[in-house]
Length: 461
Image (cartoon, rainbow, N blue to C red; front, side):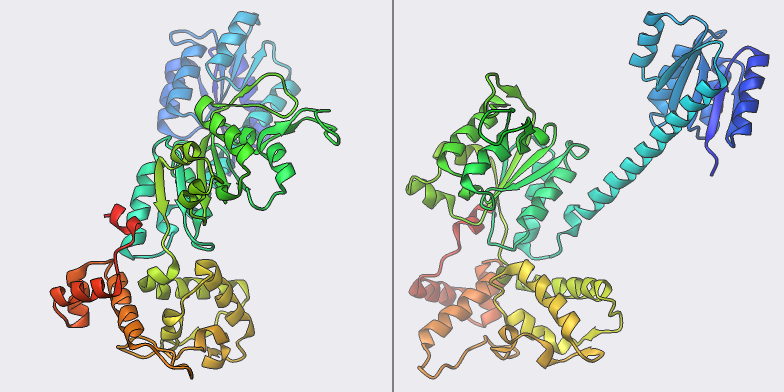
């Protein structure tokens, strides 16, 4: 599609010359003899670029510029004038002009300025489309599941995204902590700025400070150039500190200062650098226990956990397993070019009965393995990994592994009650109806087996 250019010029001969030049170079050209006519033309149809004289009868070129940037911010504006004073140029650029040319305008110079401006418009559109695509990809609606615990966490996270509060995400490995962190960032006012992630447990202890804070040239052996740290890279955006529990105590002190003072000290620098960054941290470790063991700072914990989020393990949201199985199976079929492969619903109980120690990440990997290795058009029981088929699922009953060494009836009852409570999000009345016993009997047996709702669930109510 041809780019559309609006020429706003009160000199008829110059307006005609510019129109012919634009036509000759393949652009769609509209013309206006005054600022009022130019604004009316922009109201009628979309314009990619405005070429406007500054000295116009009635509304000035600056008025046209200001209106364009206010009403049509994606439209580029090039200002033309016979009065090439520095003051006028500065004012036009401050108001958002893409370029500033003086009359008489050289034909080649004009076309070069037009091409640069249109390229900027194109790049802005691409960036905007990319941001929309990324925002959709990391929307909260893309974190699949309908279990009450997950929906509660997503609701809290969505509200937290609109704030500047630090967020601490806790959950087992593979539960999707980074995905949740990205959803918080890309649904926040900082979405257009960087999302920078660093795994505190994956970088050697002696290199972590440089990776986080950066260094100046010559600050230590091997520092042959200035280096930006991850915190500085995230300026204006979000810094995701994965596995924060692995951060050494000496760096915990420095991170605390970043949160409190909003500044960093690069290695080898004599002056602090102001930064504006929102911190989201994540860990699979119990930081409260680490505080008691003096391996994690209590003051840092409370700075990070302004908004605590507890991602449930996959085994604690069993009703979401079929949804995730279908999703990852469909994605694996597309990725591995096996569109005809089918998965029978009869196999689903094997997925639901498994405990998923690796959580969603393990489920995703298993679905791809099944898709790649299944021989026929249908996934058969023997195509499932041994971990899924080790315990045969039984309908309307808890799965029991009948070992050679014997089994504890008390243990079976405890497990059955625990699973019923988890299935109903620890609602005792619903769990009792599910087990076909009275609520009073359920409470008695809960006390007998020492079953109590986890603290995190109590908080989430």
